[in-house]
Image (cartoon, rainbow, N blue to C red; front, side, top):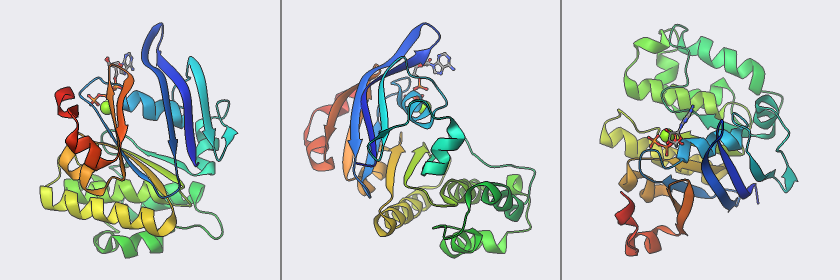
Length: 231
Ligand SMILES: Nc1ncnc2c1ncn2[C@@H]1O[C@H](COP(=O)(O)OP(=O)(O)OP(=O)(O)O)[C@@H](O)[C@H]1O
Ligand SMILES: [Mg+2]
């Protein structure tokens, strides 16, 4: 297991938002984490990343407790989050964005350095001198994804990466995410409102409702179940 949550609860102040969430993810597994607005998906990702202190439960990475680790230490282990909205520096050029994050996350023998990212998304190489915030939404999202994978990611969490992108770009980008995950045994947690696109690349589907997991199974079973009821 790369990542395990054991009865994890978290919230904001006195308010509990997710309660007793348990999950265990294998290397290379792609999980679609679905649920309506306010279900607790982003809160779950924040708790895993260490941006939010859980009120109860355990988080394990490679079988070791990481509950007391800060965000930077979790990044160093290979946990990565592409946040809701675009996780880029809009006023820096594409190359500068990659330099800033690469300086922290790319060490010797890293899985993805700037050259590897340019190979994955050639358009970013062409645009390396362009101010990131002036690129199209799709190009900005490719850059955000690139920043998230720089270094040696082991578990990539993507919070609604398809927002604002054209459907054909979404399916192309998701296929690339799948190929990267499968070829590098990288686990992905994909939070999506675009259920159809997420289900196309997912090995497993988890549905949250009111801060709790109400369905956990493969996409086939998800399609056959009455889980649409939650949307
Ligand atoms: N910073 C915050 N402070 C207080 N409450 C918050 C905060 N962020 C989220 N919440 C509350 O926690 C609940 C879950 O929010 P969360 O962002 O995890 O949902 P989500 O499943 O990601 O929804 P969406 O699909 O809209 O992004 C909501 O009721 C929300 O109002
Ligand atoms: Mg959210």
